[in-house]
Image 1 (cartoon, rainbow, N blue to C red):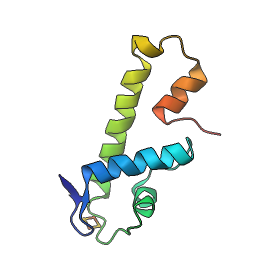
Image 2: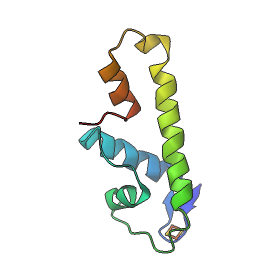
Image 3: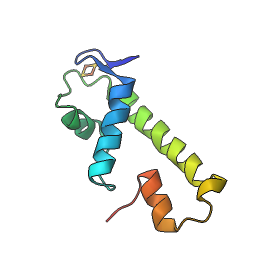
Image 4: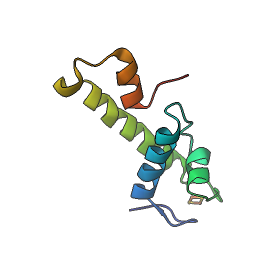
Length: 89
Ligand code: FES
């Protein structure tokens, strides 16, 4: 599914960029402009930015589901924040 028609960016491109940002820095910024920077693109009309933000929200919700799963039930709060990509400094 194409998310950004100006730059031909697909949903999976957004997801990979989010993973790359968080791999480099777990407290990395995930606003659309930073995701586009990771993809070496720039917003043009920026009408796709709300959809990009919703994809990021969806990914964070998925991560929170994993944190709540029994597999991670013994992990520390810090580990859970990192898993969710919400760790800050
Ligand atoms: S649709 Fe993404 S910048 Fe225009």
